[in-house]
Each structure stands twice: as C-alpha cells, then as structure tokens.
Amino acid sequence: MEPITLTTERLLLRTFTAEDTEAVYRSCQDPDIQRWTTVPSPYEWQHAAEFTEHMVPDGWRNSTMCTFAVLPREGGPLMASVSVTLRTFSGTWEIGFWTGKEHRGRGVMAEAVTAVSHWSFMRLGATRLEWRAEVGNTGSRAVAEKTGFRVEGCLRAALLNKDTLRDTWVGSLLPSDLGLTGTHAYLPAGP
Image 1 (cartoon, rainbow, N blue to C red):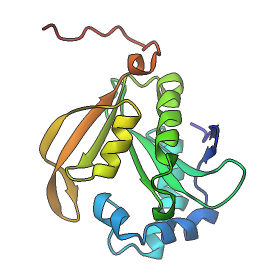
Image 2: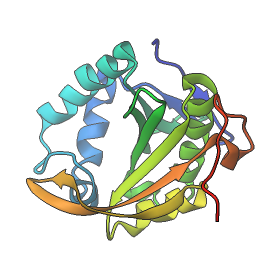
Image 3: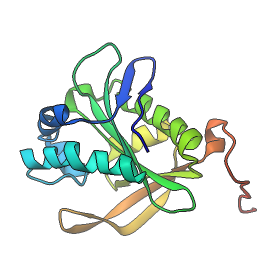
C-alpha cells in the first residue's frame, strides 16, 4: 500500500520520513512516552532513525502497519504519532498513539484517532479496531473513550514492555459505533 495523507479541521496526518527523525528523537525523550509505550528506554538516535527510515515505510509497503505523523494542518512541528497495525486476517487492526508533551490536553490525539479510525474502516476494510494500553495509562484511556472505543476489560500479562509483562486494558471500536456500515454482518450476543 502506498502511504496516504489525511486532513482534519486542524491536522495533517502523513507518513513519517527521514526528515522527521530529529523530531521523533526529541519527542521520545519524554519520560511518559518511554513509560507508557513500548518505545525503547533510553531512546537513542538510532531508534528514531530505524522508526522513520525502516519500520514506517516497511509497514506501509507490507500493508501491515500504517503510521501517521500528526502535524498542524497549516504547518508546524510534529505533534504526535498514530498507527494501525494488522492483528488478524479477519480484519482486526490495533490502534496505537503517542502525543508530544507540549501538545497534550488540546484534543489533538482524539482528532487524529477519529480520522484514522474512519479511514481504517473505509479504506482498510477493518472489521474491528482494538485499543490496548497498560493499566494505569489514563491519558490513553481518556482518548480511547472520547473517540468511541468501548473498554471491554483487562487482560492479565498481555503486554511485554521493558522486559516485564504488564496487565492491559483493551477496548474496541466497530464501524457501527461510528455510523458506518461494516464489511460483514454483526450478530451481537443476546442477553
């Protein structure tokens, strides 16, 4: 798949390029990003270069991970990252994201997640989007809930982060949650 660009009222979402390496490196120095995501810690320059020059383009090329740099629509610095990763061939994709410290609390990530969620259902044919975050990551959970994800529970030892298994919240978003028609009929469990 070729990388695409999405726009929202305030944001431009495009693929990362090698020119973004410095901005990714700086953003990922944030202790909260290192704590709550699976980025390496300490986060070194080569980690950012591997991400922008190999991981992101390979994901698009293989149609297994679509990663967007989130920037102001009218131009400006990198604000965040959001990606969807194929988890099952039945159409389940997992959404993941981080926001630079100076851009938190302004609705940037909720706006980006909404755009990527719509795109995932419409373009990728996703049947389900899953959100996962380590228990305690209340910022991530707030974004998920604000954008319509339903928290379904807690999975024990479901996340390996920094060589430690951690409990994980899991939630889902279906096309019908956004008023979209899915690619398959859905029969929810009865009472």
